[in-house]
Image 1 (cartoon, rainbow, N blue to C red):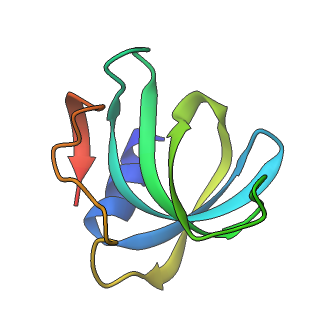
Image 2: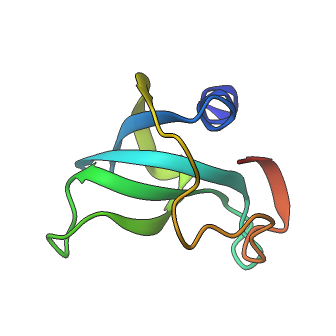
Length: 98
């Protein structure tokens, strides 16, 4: 999945996936290793799909091992979302980022 996520980030493509049983649509921004857990994580801005709060868009960290059915769409997002932090301190090992 690393390659798909990094290609989506590089090309600013929206991705869709299932996470903990629910479909999500996100703009991926950073992919790497979380500093506290050691898990691979995706920092993304959710723009559609399920949200337990019932509201989107919003920022979220997704544990990559919990992602299934990942699909890179043809939809492109033009720029980083407000609040994006290049070099996110929660993710000291970064595979790819905007």
